[in-house]
Every structure is written in structure tokens, then in C-alpha cells.
Figure 1 (cartoon, rainbow, N blue to C red):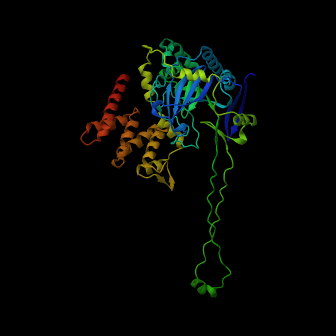
Figure 2 (cartoon, rainbow, N blue to C red):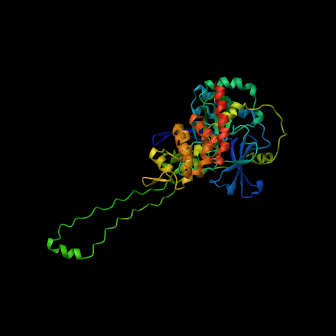
Figure 3 (spheres, one colour):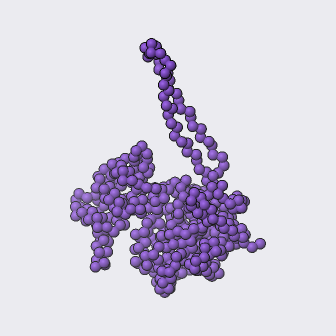
Length: 481
């Protein structure tokens, strides 16, 4: 039986969502569980694999028995050298089709055939070619370490909200980097509308299947790295019912009481006030729908055959070549030595890109008014009787700064400098100084210059940040002259 691929565009509250169902897929690209191991001395960490062909490509350690609230420990597998040539060729052809004008369904048809059975949502989105902490993604996963932002249920964003993944994990090791072909990709990225193909792995991170050298060129040319994104729809969700606020009953006027009885009525005890009827909160019955990271699909919008496919198939299953994957998991390639290094301007540009904390705040906060910002500067977390961001003041300041840095850099600078000038908010000063040091601004330079000039009275923890920023800013200005 061959692979069966169907697509459906559905409209959810004015938003168009593309769903693709795959039946009989070859499961050449996907994820699977590899059980529990004793790596890093934690027997409660579940091991998962992202595989490409017969090779385990990425190892994911999921703490706390695979808890969706915990960040993952991620690294490239030691024995992985490169994806099979036929898979690479298919991915290259699909990227070419997309840039020729084919739709996502037609252009990615061959990629869908490589996936396990299930329902996927597909869309186009911009990615930052970093690991979420300012490091260029290619080469940032050689050692196993915790990657912030990889939890499926992000605590800052909240479990009920959707978000778009925007950081990358390489699908090829850095050994495959060849600076000789950058001149070719440098010209190609100028004409492309889509620069890469990614598969969502966990949280804010996706695996780049195609477009590694293009990512280098996009950063070098200061072009957005736009990708076709494939997300699997697996998780059921339930929207809780929020009862409306009950209005207080209007007072009833007693027009029948005679005036002669007014004194007698006044001596009597006042009648008890009528109590408003309690609002009945219906218990949710079953689930509201299924979701991925970026979208929620209510059951009434889900095509019947796709809903049946989600219910009948497992969220994740072991492919036929599972034993081969496990055997190769602990293999290690010979250490290679190479002088092929990513250009320093590319690495420096990545340090200035939005990081994971900033993007969490963007997805967690819809907007911030000037009144709310002034309230936070006054040390309060409530405005007009409502919590602005969080009851925790420090968390509110951090989230507000990250949101403003992404959405309104000018307002971010003003807000951050006001915080740094307030000695009562000194608990946040080191964090805010580090955040603002990533912005090239004359106002920030003047502030840090003043800090360095008044070393005796300045906060000690701000001095190294100020000195580093002054050196960086003056170097930038000299290069522009």
C-alpha cells in the first residue's frame, strides 16, 4: 500500500490553517522513544531520538519522566555524520519547488511521504538561526546540555496559549559546513522566498532539515530566514469555561407601605439583602480539540477523516528500523579536525538577535500601555484592579523588558534606564543592564559612560557590563567612520 496524503484548508475564527494527513508514510524522518537510561546519573530521564533515515541524528533527554513542563537536554548524536543522499536530494528538490511558486502541499509532497502516519499543520514562518541564547545554531549542540525554551508547556507563555517556534537545531553536523559554496548560496538567498524546511521538535525549537548554508548566508546578508514549518498535531486540549460576571440585583422600591407606618418600619430590623443567584459553571465534558505548538483546532473544525486518524494512530511509535537506531546511538565517529570556521561577523550578528526569554515574553504578553509601565516603575503589579503581567514584581519587570525590546526598542530603552535610575529596584539592575547592553544606542552608551566615570558610587555589579559595552560601542563607531 502506497502513501496517502490529503490536505485541507480550514478557517478558525478568520485564521486559515493548512492541515495535512499522512497514511502509510515511510517514517524516514521523525521522533521515537528510546526508553530510560542512566545518562548523567538520572534514571528518571526519558531518552527520545530524532532520526533521519537509518541514523539517529539528535538525542533528547527529557527529565522528570518526560514531563512537558521541563526543558530538554539536547545534543547531536556522536555517530551521525550526514543524512542519506536520497533524502537530501528530496529535500533539495522540495525547497526548489517551493521557490518556483508551488503551494506548500505540492512543494512538500515528497517530504510528507517520509513522515510517520499522523496529521500535521504546515505554514511559513521566520526563524532566528540561533539556539535561543545568541549562539549560531550550527555547532551549538555538540555537547549535551539543557536548552531553555524546549519544554512543550512553557511556564512564561502559559499552557493555554499558542506560540510559533523560532529557534533552530541543525539536521547536519558542523563537519558538513563548506565555506567554498557560500558564494553560491549568497546569491541564491537573495532570490528565494523560502530559505529552509524545518520539522518542529519541542517547544520553541525546530530541526532544520534543509538550508544550513543558506542560514549562514542570510545572517551575513542580513536577510530574514523564512522557513516552511511542519508541526505534528497530537495533543488534546480543553478550554475551561469562564463564567460571566453576575450583575447585582437592582433595589426594589416599596411603594405600598403607608406613610403612617414609616416610624414603625424604621424600628424594625432591616430586611436582608437579596443574594445574587450563583452562576452555574458547567463541567467540561471531554476535550475541546487537538493542538500543536502554533494552533488549536476545535473538534467541530477538524475534518472527520483527520480526526479519525489522530484518534486511531499513536502520538509517537517506533519505526521498523528502531533496533538499528538504538545500535547506532552509542557509536562515536572518529574525531575530525577542520579549519572550516563560521565567519566571525555571522557569530556576532547572532549575539544581537532575539533570545528565548524575549520570545517567551512576546508570546505571553499581548500589549503594555504607558499607564501599566508607569505602574510597574512605581513598584506595583496591579493597574486598574487587574494584574499587569504577574503577581511577582521581578517576573513582571523582566517580562515587560523582554516584550518591549522586541516590540518597541525606543520605549524599551526609556523603560530600562528608568529602572536603572531607581535604587529601590536594584534587585533587577544586573539583569536589566545585561539586556540593554545588547542594544546599540547613544542613550545607553551615555548611561554606561556615566557609570564608568563614577566608579566610587556606581553599583559594583554594573561596572563590568558598562566597560564591555563602552568598548563594543566605540569599536562599532570607529568601524563606521
